[in-house]
Image 1: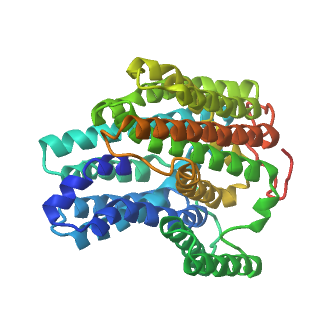
Image 2 (image 1 turned 180 degrees about the vertical axis):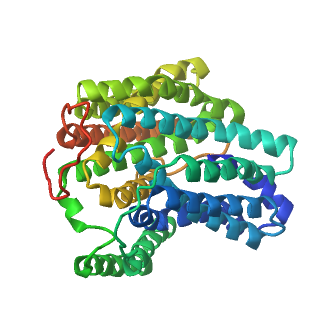
Length: 443
């Protein structure tokens, strides 16, 4: 929820603190950068120290940073708080996913997936309206301070209720690997933000080479490169990346399309995707049952194909269409997204327990990066977004490029559907708890 809450508040925060445009951008990108760069570190901490300790530590950092952001008196303090928020979230997120997946029966995993997905979907759907309401009726600092009480409760409950999954023998954190992975992600994000410049791409290449050499020579590496031989993990990662690219591009460009071309108000545009979130909440239990009954291969692959169908429906929109006319596409995308929810559970189930934290970190890191890649790739077609009130010819040209962008988004989702259908496992036993060896390449 954190980023969706903040987006609507950035103009108000910027005006109140007298921030430059670059400083204002860091309020959003600072969180994303720290979150992405430290995701593998959070996964490794989960593998080394266990879910309970890692999740509690991450939430302590996140909660304290939220308080700092809410009380920030200038731009540097706010930006520092946002970086710390991203770091805390990166530490806690892999642990939260592993604790509902590893050493569980399929029934327990399904229940955990339903709760985890419901929380994520509600946060995504409600973040924008909550942020807008707080900025309109209360001091902007409350968009951060509302995290404090839930954060404290999460720390207490995790220490009391979560089983300790820490190893019985001491394992190294692999700090060189953590540092190399953080530099790699930072360089890739910098290249995406600034364009394919030589400096960030060279840094990314050096960091990638260093990471491979470090992990190959380390006795207990953070990132076991044998994961790349696991067909389910690699295929699921590819499917998740393509899914993230398509979904992020849809959300990003639809906001401009609805407000500029269809003439929706910001509030009306924000509410368009709310029914999709409701569909996800309702159908996620069904998706878990289907994945257990007919297998994740058909469930997730079919879900991504359904998302592609829903996105393609947007390509035919004209200025005569209104809110209700968008609902067939919105609801279809929501139904497809719900069917994709079991993807993470089955990918994590395919790797050994001792590497599940890092595997979760890799998946989430690629998910964050896929959003930037999706927006950039679709942006090659939607290369110009006109100002509100532009002439008819300009608006129709925008509609044509947006239509092509929607079809490209649908194509990305279809490729993800193929990846899921070819690599995810077929129907599995309901009682299965064990995972295949990391060297497995079965799909």
